[in-house]
Image 1 (cartoon, rainbow, N blue to C red):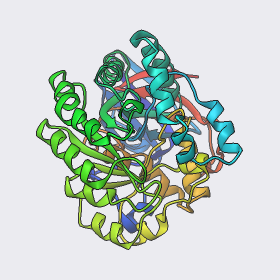
Image 2: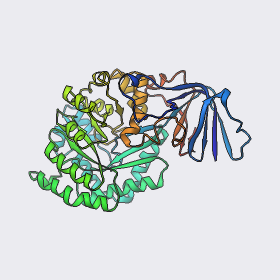
Image 3: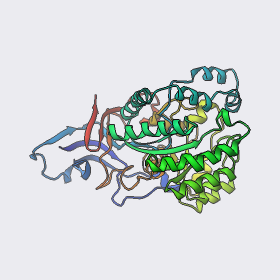
Length: 417
């Protein structure tokens, strides 16, 4: 089945010469076409352009024609950092936050990641899949077409593998593009309190080889930050992961200047994420790399933390991606439209900058910028059609409005209001 979307008010994020990312001043620019068409065939973007250049394809058999008069078309969001495979919820800790406890204080009381690990251990693989499938369907309806999902709530070999098998099953049973990340180094389990080095050895000597043997992960991640894993421990784990073909991603500098950015760049990390504490040394190191700085404004918003110095980063010439950090403890939302709004409202990013951050640069942070993140010939046909809206600036401006009419993934209509 081919799809022709015609009379598009504005086709957004078009590229004639696809880029890996956009950086610096270029983040304030996006390609658009007014009164446009988009032709999708066999799951791929085959052609697009202004309506006056529409080829004669209306008579083609098995052609689904969509009239998008008054509506805009965007490439689907690319959410490069989530923890959406989890069991239960943690709203009680939300109350603790309201009462003034910090993220670190809650963790020290056995809450946070350790609480999610206990819930996950007591949840069957089937139930974990069913809960996670609901979240996948939710983010698809909100415009996300590619997503990274981490393990990290297992904290034992058995439970980490359980999480990764659920992620693999989601890959196999849903239309969204999914990348899996092994995050055994998310926290130190209670059983290893005071024996952190032994847990690191377990990750290196047992977990990573077993994850690799079942081909369950694309990437390896480490929470390299104050109160979690040190630079030296991170170095050892990334080295071990690299030997098994797992490319690095890093939780870095959320709680303090941790050295996580530097060790991530050292290992050619696809992305370093959070970055609330980012100074001149981190910016300079990132400028010398191909690592994507990825901001998670939902977590900073939910936890009441400082925002990263995004204007300084962009002015220095860096690219910026943004992701949802969808998780039960610090960012219980996978709504990338709201992430865009936080980028504009909290971090003073321009609408064009946040569009680039959640599309092409998010695709780069996922390792899929050759196939996702923009409207370009030959890319996967992951797009959404908006309801009638006045401008693309309206999307981050109208931060609670539902603006999506139709979702198309892999060239198939997934959702049509």
